[in-house]
Amino acid sequence: MSARKALSVLFILLSSVCGAQTETPAVETGGKSLYAALFGGLFVNAVFHGSSRLFGADFAQTSWESVQTNLHSPWVWDNDVFLFNHPGHPYQGGLYHAAARAGGFTFYESLFFDALGSLTWELLGETDIPALNDLIVTTAGGAVFGEMAHLLYLEAASPWAAVPVSPMSAVTNAALKRTPRRTRNLYRFSAGAGAGWLRSSKEIQPRFKKLSEANPTSMFPVYLGFDVVYNNPFTHASTTPYSQFEIMALLGGSFWPPWMDWTILTDGYLLSFNPVYTEKNELSTGLSLHYDLIAGGNMNFSSQALDWTVKWRRLFANTALEVKTHAGWTFFSSSQYYPADDRSSSLDSRDAGNDYGTGGNLKGTITVRHKKRGTLSIGIFNYLFYIIPYNKPDSGGFDSLHLSYLEYSWRFNERLSLALNNSFYIKLTHPRYYTGVVEMANRVMVHVNWTVYARDR
Image (cartoon, rainbow, N blue to C red; front, side, top):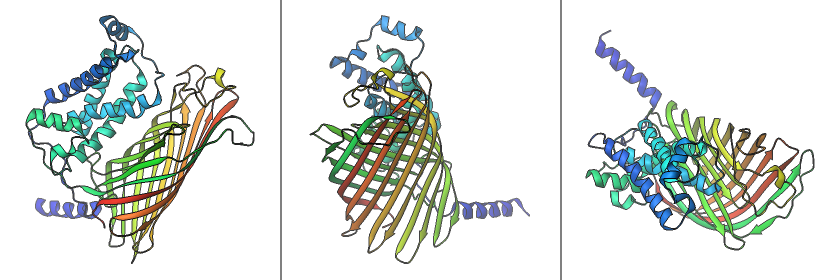
């Protein structure tokens, strides 16, 4: 067999494995600019430091003495407010990442600039002792946030229209006088608004004792949310990180009582294969990177994970069945920490910092879409973490979290739909000492969704 024939056969075999997925490569024109990536990170740190110092933040009152202290001090696990660490630090890391990506560097190359930006911030930008957890979440979480934001920035018809999506992509391209090539990889985007009823509780829970609700809080929060699917999740095959990703976000809360209720679930393929691609069945599978966040009045939790993912769709005459599963290693997690001496007191008003851990997760969704009868979705997400011992005094043991939801959506037309959602959260803290903490929330919500774009409609 000649070399040309051999290459032809190899191409046919690869095409059959990879299916029919097509995508516009998300690349920058003009080559790599080391100066843009480096100065982009310095610019981000300068803006954050300058604005914080201007408004009198204690951590921003740096001096030569504070820098010397940071350079010579051993790194610690910090005790910052949860929202500063999640999603604050991943967002900051995402700005470093976007500057590097717009400067022409790849996803993996940009990780260096994520870590460098975080390192210089920890040593030079704060009076606080450098925190190991901040370096981890800024680097890994920043890669997730920054990559998704940068790729969505490239979807805009006008780069300036997408400045709010990825400010540093816009700033870097403007500084380099580059016009990025627009991509057309968006698969589905919908946004919505709604309101609902939320009941939440937190209590000290002795082991082996029947669970009883203690001082539950009820409220009527309002919500904004959006779902993003980038490239076809069922036929995708690529070794380009985040050339297929998904975001589910729900952001809301109430003013009385003051309450926040955020849920952000993301996954992106680092590499994927398409072993099944027929007229009725489509399946992709591969290694994926995840950043999940739950932040609320009674429940703070985040997970950064490497999972193996399977996404399958079966097409019928008027119905599509979609199944997505993820299982793997949560390499870094964060959750509420409660000191041992605080166990007998009220848990409602005290923010006692964060525990950090590592463990596993198992997640899945099932969606049935009928052309006339609407869409039914079920999601189940489970996490189990081993708490890193003594990252706080008395830290140790395990944390577990369960999230599940059931949603039915009725379509009025191609774009407008009305959905009813019931979600349940429970987080159990199993510490080294006798008692644990149980945090629960149940939400019933009605929301209106507008499908802005859908390639599969």
